[in-house]
Image (cartoon, rainbow, N blue to C red; front, side, top):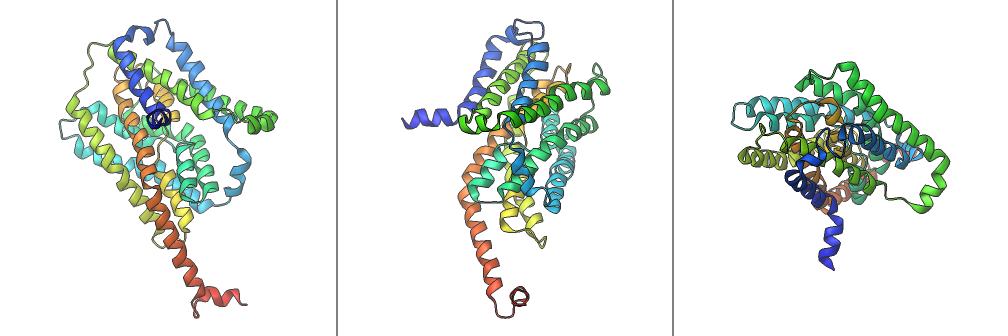
Length: 349
């Protein structure tokens, strides 16, 4: 029973492995022009379904609670979409001198350009007891912001496929991302009571569609005889992703906690939102921006590695971060009780 429970909990990670193996065995099914017709079913229908599902599941009313915490939002989005990509770019200037596959290195850069996820950062912030409303707002706002900023960052750091004009990229993003999100939010307004009562498995639906996208992406790779994945390069990328993830988390905590005035609960939300990256938004964006790249799947590999790493590592750290937040809150409360504390004096006025 314990094994079955574990398998159900990790079904998405297991699914990634299975679809990649399936793509290796049957690459002709999911290639462009194949039986699945991914140029239509994936590029338009599947991607649109993911973002419509996101719009339908997003509780807009909960975001209003955190709307005016501007300084926290500015810190999270700046760290996620400016500081993070620049630090990775500097790191890659050094790694480019090594023998690591250049396309996997480009994939590390794409990870840095991704917006925060809508779900995992919020779930982990809630599990710790952090500022859940701030996490919800920044995850959602970051996703909307990423629709515009992430493609710009990808084009800036990696360039675009010559077969896809810049205007076509954003027109396709608008039709398959923005429009479905808005339609999802509109539909939620009419179906809110039904959705809250029945609680549809929004996350499972998006994840299942995402597995289809991953499958067709790797079908393109395995059907191309000119592409080979170097095992040594892949291992090094896994190590870099595993090592750099906690480093960026600690950096985010230090920057947000060092004299910034953020509460411990705010710092927890900052840590998860500013270092987590969205696979649900990322893979469809890569599919659109780099349509026609024969190395698209290699570019996608680091994001596929980073996604389960951020969830597993975040889950493991929940008790430690909760203890840290509790101790910090106790220190703050003790300062309020000090006889000469100006906060106490002002509260007595």
